[in-house]
Amino acid sequence: MAGATVQRTRAQQVNDLLDSAEVAALIADLEETRWTGRPGYPVRSMVGMMLVKSLYAIPTWSRTARLVGEHAALQEALGAAPSVYACYRFTAKLREFPDAVDRCIAAVLARLREQNPEMGRNIAIDGSDMPAYANGQRFVSKGGRERERYSDPDASWGHRSSVSTRSGGGYYGYKLHAAVCTATGLPVAWRVESARTNETMIAPSLLDAAAARGFRTETCAMDKGYDVTTMYDACEERGIRPIVPLRQTPDVKKGKDAPPSCEHGVWTFAGSDTKRGASKWRCSAGQCAPASAWVKADRLHPLVPRATARFKSLYHRRGAVEREFGRLKHEWSLLPLRVRRIDGVRLHADLSILARLSMALLAAQPLRVVTDAGFGKAAA
Image (tube, rainbow, N blue to C red):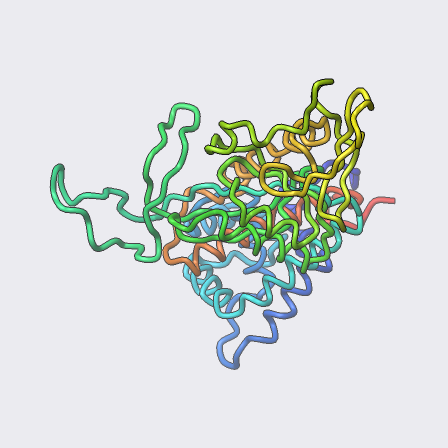
């Protein structure tokens, strides 16, 4: 057939992403940074290599360059087959101009928010381990002294929980902290730090980053690791309701987190007042005087009480951030790391998530007509 409307192939996805307004703006920004002299490969081809690496979940540039060199459709989409050395030079250039990548990410997120105004209203925050591309042996030899020099000095020792057949314990590397929309499953803000960085110190900056990108967050679900007073205060200062289960602290063991009660039984929740900073509870029988009372919001008594169906529903959606970590690691080349130093790891995470978000945006666009002559126009 001369032409037919079909599902996008990988090569066509790369071509369509390169033609999108947001990625085209990134290409234009990087074109302005080019210096005089040998022109090298087109910037469009280099950005395409970046997308190919994530779309095909390839961990190294050498394998990416080899794939493009053997793939005629990808060469047509990119307009060239850049060498592995050109890819390394290009990533070094991106580290010099991080603002260009940030603007592209912000533009893609803005388009996604236009398509789904509810995006970012309810989010979940967590951190996930990223083992470094370095020697992970903590000791020089069995029973010997602790290692002092590492091939990646920016990484540090941290702790991770057990997953599937992998036991928990210490690891050497980094941690990706992310805020994920529970409705779409897409990241709205993220940050890479050393493995030993406390998660509660990073979460407020993620809330600020999401707000700076135009998201109006109402609730934030987090696990017990974020159950500290400073985290509740940080959320409430930003007008966000924290959805966090309680740790078994002494006050919790004494039952101080329980709702008010009387001889008629446990009182029922009757709503919260944000301006007052308190929640209202009523006597279940309505026979007490007064029949209702206000309880000031704090760690033990949040404005969305833990006993309510709303809290349980919102916390149940916290799994969105765990699923997204799995997708990024196994489907979008986030792991295994094959770069060193924190600037390189941050750029790697940004590029992987940019490809993920761009593909989510492309999925809502019309398909194109593939002809024998190459990539066609959008189908009617």
